[in-house]
Length: 587
Image 1: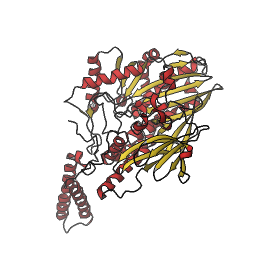
Image 2: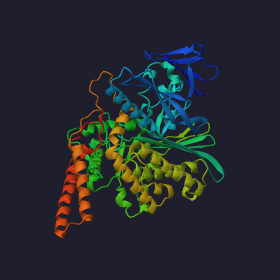
Image 3: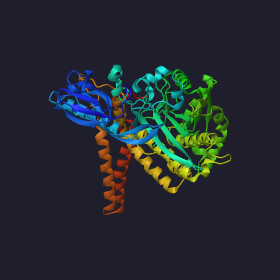
Image 4: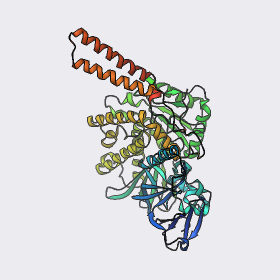
């Protein structure tokens, strides 16, 4: 039981300390957190004062310093997703942020205000759906990584052996990580999407799982985080693994998605689609090479599937990507570009088969991971498809679901679930589960990055593009526009605070949250609204002569149009921009 907490925890609160007790049989250890010195130690059950207020919790997310001092974040509600090889997998659905300090009297009004803002940032991150954990299974690794480990690895605590790319509370648990004896009280949590289904084809029952792990390196929101950082971490990087479990045999197929891996930006500026800017002042090759070196170490050969438009504002990104793969001249990295929007225009979604045919040989060469019921590895996955579009959400997810289906077809035939010549598409019940799960995956990834559900999920769900789907896409695009321009600065700051990219300094005199806004930010929108209203009033209440009416309408109309043009020209200054880390403007 040294490594694992089966039952959950009890939190005992006294004015001096937080005590966290493991509810397992035979466990006597209790974690004691001093609310004054913030020291964390191990003690025993009899040391918990009877006067303590007790409540059940399901995990410790970690600790964080804000203006008012340190806070403890705990999981207060969980929902069972299902079981992976008889290990329970949970979704954390509610959290609590508890202050070590018992009063806020030591703060000035401005500090109180800042502390409130930082707390609302933490609550925002925690309110986004998709935090998963297990107290007995390592969710951060693929089946293939878990199969190729040493006996020492098996002995490690879940926190020690987790893949740091996918532990979203790694920063919050850094103090726990430094003390191995308290590791079992720390719960590594991943962010992304997990779904599990018990399925049946030809009367043969198997478990089918889809797991998407979102990287916490270069994490953020759609327009503020694009491309890569100097370490080679790509924005919106997600590893997606599809698992089949049948009669003790396990098969898995892994794919990745991630932003185009060089230095580019696309800051919001009130336009519907801001123009992407490729940075001119940096050496792209360093970061590009770092990115692919680490990908090759993790996954083997790379097949890049670039789905961006090959005309308009996306064209330079496609050209630069192709050029850089060529000049890197690494035999492990191959590249294919497919203009998704052009090829599938006017609802011609059947044309995706063109791309599938181009990738088929490569996919057979990469294979998939398969281990038989005796635990013997039959095949390994030798390479990976790295798909991207601009956001790596909508187009990318469609292609990934098609590649995953092709792999699944081969796996189910090899395991003897499908007969020779049978196709997954013909299995109506399973096909419905499959399509809906991939659409749910698209939605989860899109909510986490763009703030709304995915587009094109009607195709993923039904295999057809529908009129209603187009209307829903329009609505989601509108919400995305609003969020990207007027609330994403806050969302970006929230993620940076949560992941430790920004640390609150208690002594810092000038808080970055207070940025003085120029007079034009208020004046121009007010002038525009007033002028537009006057224009409408003049139209409705006609003057004595039509020339007089026309003169008024032209005057107020040009005034409202003029201010609108000025606002649009200075669009970058009117959007909600991040204040903590991602504030620098790219050239």
